[in-house]
Amino acid sequence: MYNMKGLAHIGLSTRDTEASKNFYINNLGFSLVSETRLDRPDGSWLNLSFLNLNGLVVELIEASDKAKSGVDGVGSINHIAIEVENLPEIMNNLKSRGIVFENENPRQIRELFNGVQVAFLKGPNGERIELFEYL
Image (cartoon, rainbow, N blue to C red; front, side):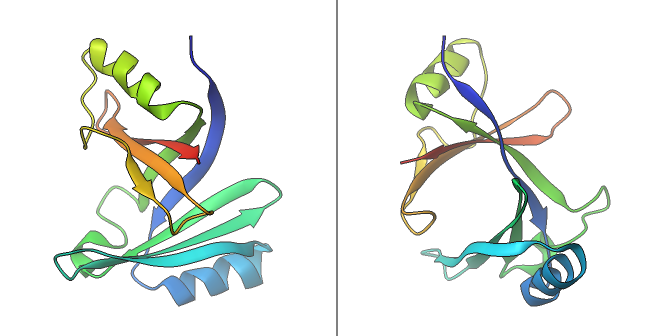
């Protein structure tokens, strides 16, 4: 039908990107792969840092709104991301099954990995799932 490739990364909320990077790099042996700051039209921003340990990729997410960063009472995992091919087709197929996405269309982020497109949905227990495609 379509190609779900596997785990792309695990997104972790943090209140302090530098402290989190230091912990994962200096204590657990991760290496920094990519980082960027996404500025939004409303003045808010997200700092995103991707770390890798032998294929395990962790995305550290720090929001300008600290109420949205860090532990939220149930843990700091923000989302799981599944790498896909042909995200628009996958979204159309899932929408036809009644799946609702956070955005109507894939969101393209040119600043990450020379371009990606993403779409978020919720699983049956409210968990956030990101469909993630390299452009």
